Length: 104
Image 1 (cartoon, rainbow, N blue to C red):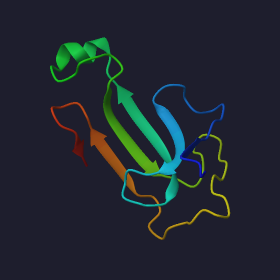
Image 2 (image 1 turned 60 degrees about the vertical axis):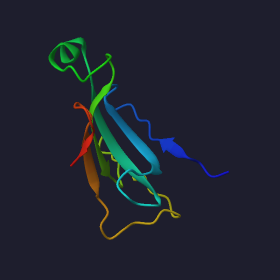
Image 3 (image 1 turned 90 degrees about the vertical axis):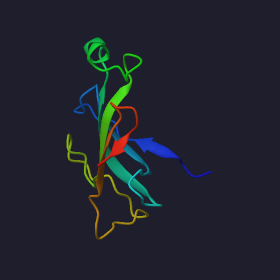
Image 4 (image 1 turned 180 degrees about the horizontal axis):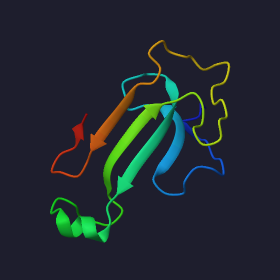
């Protein structure tokens, strides 16, 4: 069975809000890609300021960017079976802080 996802783990990645993930992306590609995912989770203060939020830890926004190297340790992440696209570097930003998510 093919792998559904893989995490790149290195000691230099900040422990909160950042992941480097190999999976089918949310940007419209059908193939697996490595992506830098940066997200911001709701705090108690965010809940006080935004009536749409329901609980601490809920994702406020998420930015996803296709990458070939880890920006924290420099390791080349692609393997020989991976396809490198001409337009590699697609990105998306989704804001979940309102009544409905907005993709930008």
